[in-house]
View 1 (cartoon, rainbow, N blue to C red):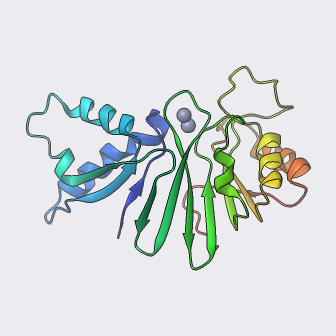
View 2 (tube, rainbow, N blue to C red; view 1 turned 180 degrees about the vertical axis):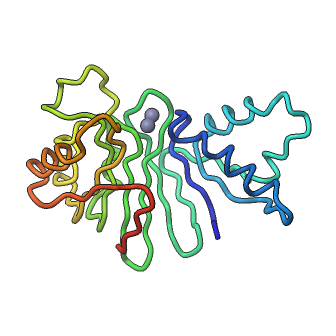
Amino acid sequence: MVDAIVVSHQHPDHCLDLLMAFHAFCFRPEPRYGVPVYCPQSVIDRLLAFVEADDDSELETTLDFRPVDDGDLVEIGDIEVTFARTDHSVPTVASRWEASGRVLAYSADTGPEGDWMRLAAGADLFVCEASYQGPPGESDYPHHLTAMQAGAIARQVGAKNLMLTHIPPYLDVGRSVAEAETTFDRQVELAVPGITRKI
Ligand SMILES: [Zn+2]
Ligand SMILES: [Zn+2]
């Protein structure tokens, strides 16, 4: 059972699965309509453009799009979710999920600039992107993080646990984890498909 979906930004590796979700909800014997989707307006615009030529598309009745941006707070069940704009090339939101005094934070895609990392302050689990390896500054694209930067940010904001994500499949994930541990100064976890973890 899916209560709601949160998507950080319009890049294909983050939002294209929403079209698959639309089909899975809509085209079955008992369709499910009105599934809340929280995301930047630019995600909504991009998906609507994709189905624009299908004049009978039920995308907007199946997915209940609710645009969010920097500073917004929404409630999903008993979870409070707050958003902050990240340092990325398109409008992107990091998120902080709080329930029963426990906190999960997610960086989304981002570089090291801005104050988005305030959302991860004291988080019980901070899921942070780590697109690159090696010393900060070595990569040529500034709107992603190295593993060492992820570890340094997690330590700076006092996150209790750090889990790396968004590591390209051609990199050695063990090296990314090891590099993040040098700056976080404690054990670092790795996000893998299908993982569940208590917070
Ligand atoms: Zn991106
Ligand atoms: Zn991405």
